Image (cartoon, rainbow, N blue to C red; front, side):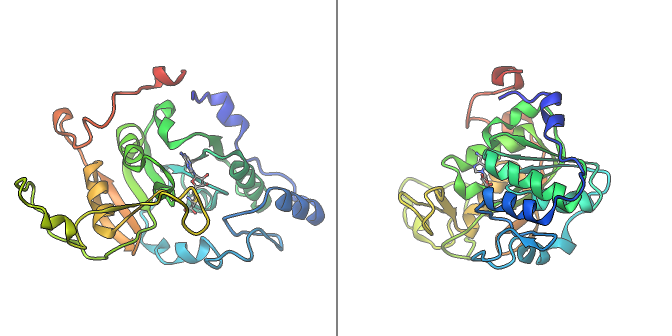
Length: 274
Ligand SMILES: C[S@@+](CC[C@H](N)C(=O)[O-])C[C@H]1O[C@@H](n2cnc3c(N)ncnc32)[C@H](O)[C@@H]1O
């Protein structure tokens, strides 16, 4: 999928006069259900969220440990209704691009940004698997709550590292299994099998059916698995901000030593329609 400048500008959330409350309420309802809870001038978008006032309650747990984004560029992948995009803009990011694969969530984001008067955020339809089409790197990439919704999660991390991550990554995945992190050797002989049964060995749990009534839940790593996959995709863990949230820094590797070098063929902007 190609991304034209005109296309992105057209979807930039524009500051507009406040919508009359009844019109706002009916637009919020028409775009529901919402995953992000906002208070849009008295109209709450997800007042009955099963995680509470989400994601505000989650963000409050680590907001003060985030890097300074003033003047920086931010890419929010799987932005949903734009909570993190808007927080970054409020914190002074120079440029914020929120992308999601779902049009309805993007419409929610545009409505929320408009209603909250958060000016200048770009929202665009883009799958994480097509980030090469952006053709640029961002100071901070936000990849919160998307990893476990993908059938091919490690490929997504590899593509983010290869094409759009410029400096920092803010990452969250739902985790299941042990919180232990076993010490893993660089190699084992074929005869070694017991190590894989250690609770703290890096693992992914595959969800063949549904979890929480949601068929888009595919893979839940344990803590060791999350950390190992981040490292393997070229992200050094700078800080574990809370149980499932990591702040990572892009690590540099010579081309022939990238851990992700054999995962997929090179896929550049030309091949996705630019
Ligand atoms: C659980 S929500 C997380 C939203 C937000 N990042 C947060 O942490 O609150 C997952 C989001 O990922 C989006 N998503 C799922 N697959 C995607 C893909 N392949 N590319 C981009 N976004 C995707 C969904 O549409 C949804 O908005």
